Image 1 (cartoon, helix red, strand yellow):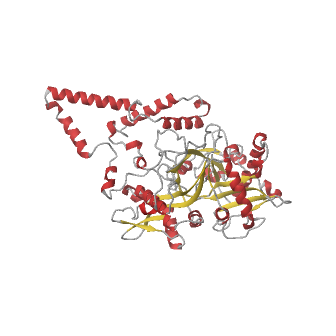
Image 2: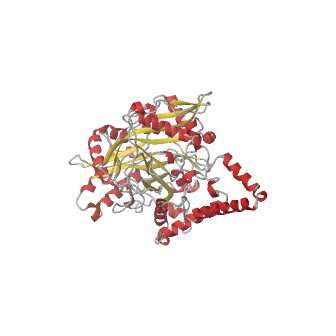
Image 3: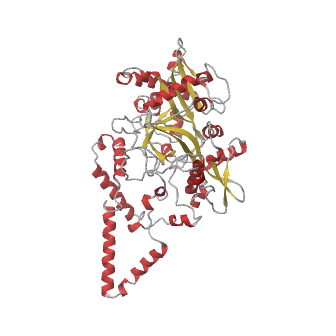
Length: 569
């Protein structure tokens, strides 16, 4: 499956996208402005030297020619993989893993040298096409990661750490920068109060018009006001972490970035962090280079609260992913998805057969075995099951009962609840959470959740909204039974749970159900007819080093998905 909207996933500006070079706001940052090596004066001197070479004496001319040949040889060696511009081993490994994962049998025997040669040929092709220059001209430093080269993140090419831990030490509050980073005079900082309906509406309108689109500009994420309130106001949230930029003269909101507190466990280390999200700059202002300043300002605000680590995601390759997961899509409303070109009818299939193959049952299978919507009384048991189940994975959030209550109950919307509530969507509903309760013991044995994130359809006369559901968190006691994995019982139980989630999502008029290759998802995606998308999501940790975690591919003895247990909204 290769649908336009999957590239939308990997472009999310809720994720930390590659920023432009920093704004020229003070002398400290002026060195970051140029995208090429050497100053403009130095480049003009090089041009002058070239134009006067023929008029020089034979001795001078010979020296200049030798110098030019030397530069050319160095550039050619760089393109061939030698010298300081050689393609890092980590980049080769990342590409090799992706080729093997995506290429099927044809790519099963790909080797590092073949990948390196292909990447080097791509570099030469870019020079021929004028996309990059010899000697660094017209080329962003560090492959476009100049900003991230100044940040406490693992750099591409670094060897995996032997010990997990912070890259830079924490600072006392008094040593943290106290003043906001300067903006150009036409802009001003604005901390948003999302309890104010008018300001929440402003944020909704900014994201609706300027948030991430797919490569063909056919779909754009449309976070509802209810979704933003649910996502950005978890227990213990800091208002100062909801950071906007306004036009000074009109007070119009034109950029935003946010962070919310999260308690993380990465392998056997626990620490407080921020989950950075919803980075958005108005389309007409993206040449203003606001992104790096937004990132630095949200970092400063987190430091003021004593938080020095962060989690973020991006579809682009930045320094350096801790894991990479792939998007998968389960089509529900086939006629609509084909009509809006989210997917297509394969050459060897008819639309009618495609609809028949993707039909889901009329009612949840576990409805007769204790499946019901989660209630307030279930919070202690769900919290306990969640935290025990997440021990299966290497990077996970650690939630208190208050946080479980917020994540799984606060976005249920307004309307009737009860035995038949699975058949409809309530007004303002953001999250769907169901539990399986043993009728005799009243013990919660399973829970399953998903959330709603629609997209605006921009190139259709018939439809204006794509209703997409995203798999959230789940857990089952079956995982703790002896030989549950070896016998296939865990896989079967997860298929039943997620299969029922598909039925509920279909009844609520969702068009597609999306999931990533994280947690235990890999064991049921294919059997439940999820199709592989073309979107990848990279997970990053700020100011924290750890070895790579299993995402779309296994890492060492850890199966695919088991490294990542965090679902980013």
